[in-house]
Length: 86
Image 1 (spheres, rainbow, N blue to C red):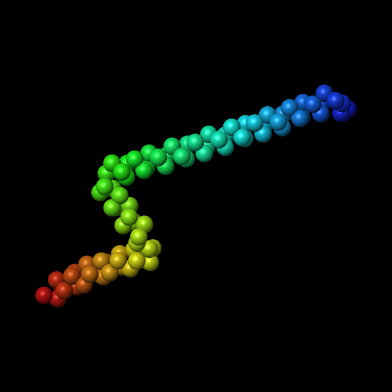
Image 2 (cartoon, rainbow, N blue to C red):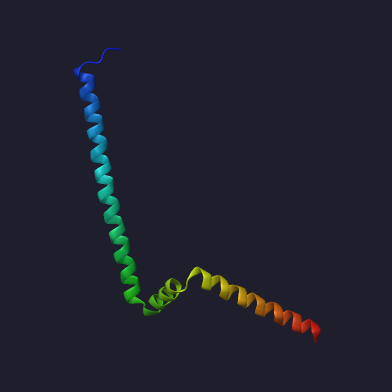
């Protein structure tokens, strides 16, 4: 297989095309993420109750969430045990 100037030129055009496509894709991805963030901000501004729910979710750490879930389970099981004893 002989490598000549046209083969090198076609590879160069191919890789420059890939670079242009990747650049365009990156720009579109960034624009999509910005648009998505603006829509989320609008929904939070429009519905203050939604914002309060989001604040509660972000303020609660994973450890607190599992502790509160476990305490509610233990409370439910202790009610079940007390109802069987009576």
